[in-house]
Length: 161
Image (cartoon, rainbow, N blue to C red; front, top):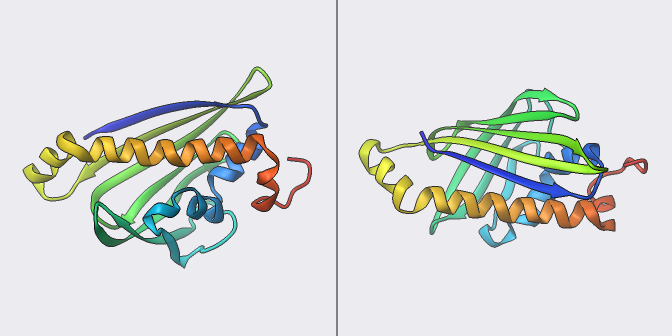
């Protein structure tokens, strides 16, 4: 099963980074090129433990729906979302936030298993792992941009963050 590890230093408080990472609205804005929209479950605001969101998006030229659930949640340290329905056979995405030198080290651990047996394994090697890494990096860089500037106020209503 492929695993993607990413780390990004963000010059913003951990709580802000944590909340931006679970913002449905920020997620939609960060990957607008896929046309990804929340269409069921939590469709706006911040998603929390045991809540689900269904995304509709065009990935790799194919429109698809994917439903994920927040299966683990420890504010402001970590949360995990996992696919409950969608194109993957399975995925678990752990988001980790570590206070570091006045900012936040944001880490992602993304485990996934493709559908379609040996063809899925071949797709992982040929393009899917690279595609998912790029997708996550685009999202994370947008979180960094929003968290470090004044744009975070558009997504979070708590003035102390």
